Amino acid sequence: MEPENIPEEPGKPEEPEELADALVAVQRLIRRRLRHEMPDPPLRGAEVELLRLVVARPGIGVSRAARELRLAGNSVSTLVNQLARAGYLVRETNPADRRAARLLPTPAAGTRLAEWRARRAALVRRQVARLDAADRQALYAALPALRKLADTLHEEAEEP
Image 1 (cartoon, helix red, strand yellow):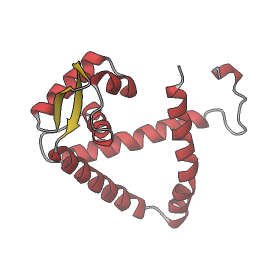
Image 2 (tube, rainbow, N blue to C red):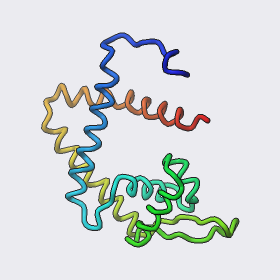
Image 3 (spheres, one colour):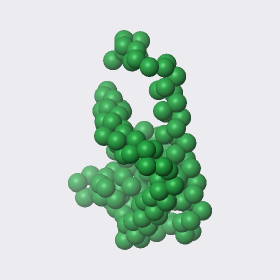
């Protein structure tokens, strides 16, 4: 659906932009805080996203990973090389197509992501605990709608 065909929702016209800004700010601040807490080597956002994708889908190819992350193939190849040097990914020849490579996570990748998830959860838990009860309740009540928003964004990204 084209943006001009979407009916305007009731409420203030700036609210969608404010929501997007707030979500981006929260994500950016979480990443910044965690970047300083995580052990070396530091990983950039794109590296973490690729690592998460490969852990979720071991054996994924470089070109498929590039499509799913909406990045250029050569950019993903560069990220793969960096993560392989850091000991987080293994790039091996795909037995079904010897011209293609499969990406596999190392045990260190799983450990790194598990530590990142645990630290992220602890950080968010601490910050949410600092809010008053009404704000905490409002955040938790918004989770189903935020998940639906994420689903619709994902579905639209998958459309040709």
